[in-house]
Length: 264
Image (cartoon, rainbow, N blue to C red; front, side, top):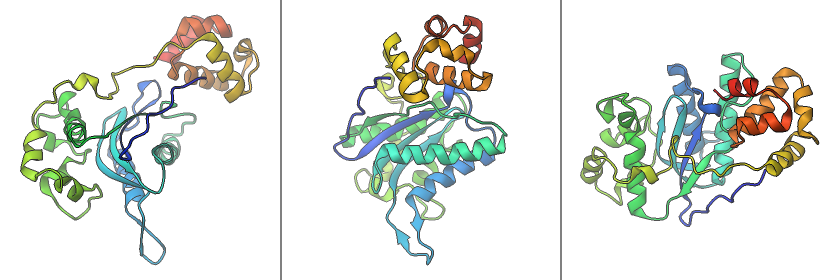
């Protein structure tokens, strides 16, 4: 299926948003949140068998883990952003599927990202990412939310942290940032978020190409004859890529009601 090329950052810094497939929850309990934090830490704080420090695969400036999605503010290092996000997704999905005895995709097929090419927008994103729990009505004070990197900035502690707060404080004072993060971000509707959907309608030809290239299905009508779990997995993937329910029903022969249930 045809996709737009991901915009390249001139600074190597990206705001990344990853969400659960069909917006399902990807964190069920405290252990799940801790597992994701551990995965992020392992990418930035690396050591060999002798305990010698290795170059980070990515540098993280901020993160916020919400129930069905997560935000990251990162800089490419040893790996490109797509490889870093893939590594995060594969590692966490393996943990999650094993724990909850499930199979199949956990995350939306393609993560979303935007380049960060100015200090002004970088600071805006630092504020926006940390304000997510407040915006969602989960907490009344950003500092009360346990699954974001704000505590690393608020307390400026070197212990048990992995975000590059010192690099940030070298560009903006602690006092200014701590004041700004409690001020609502103007124009936040333009920032990448779970409720922002800039995707274009998917054409019939794109669906057919996707089925052939990614699934080995030469005729869309063959989908209805697949084993049920396999059929549902294919349909969910196409839904996550923007295909319509009526469109899929027409092309595959699978009933509208069945596909509608999968879309919920």
